[in-house]
Image (cartoon, rainbow, N blue to C red; front, side, top):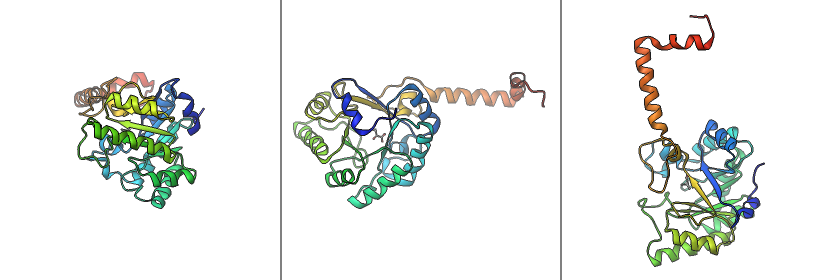
Length: 261
Ligand code: KIV
């Protein structure tokens, strides 16, 4: 059964939440079948699927397309839709864009950084919000870990508290020291979901392409459970060999059970 925003509270300090990203219908279908309780359609889609150098290129139209596809694959799973760069630049723009994502299937929206007035405006208008602090790729100069100095750790800690105060029901913590992830998780009443934020968060999120090994770069804090890029390469090479030698499609006809030529 689909989780509602309030349901996430029951995990706090009890059971860790596994979250994966998805951008397509068939992947979403598999995640739902596996019992993943929450899918993030993140703006990482721009980098891992669309070939952009940064998530800044992603538009609200792109997100509508991908959220719609994921919803068609995972009808009973909570879907978080990312608000891309600048689509949450002010309260009314953010609200209009959140409605667009809701209409195609998002149950909640995520936005990066301490945009507190935007978060509270969305919540006041019935849009459940997921916060995101630590490394915030839309505006970061590089992808290095943040919160490593006392001063920066204090800034991230205060941002986390303020985002909760503004009304977020879940908070993503990206690429911060494990001790800071633990401190924030203990201080907040809402669940934290870490990505490169250590083992003490209330949940963990992984980008699906990193998890299945698609692409040529994976962040050091990700894990490859498979190497799908290698499989694609191998399949493509075998197909080339078989077509050129005439083996394909002759070698499938007997399996297809057809006498057609
Ligand atoms: O866009 C995304 O996939 C994200 C995760 C990295 C948390 O924001």
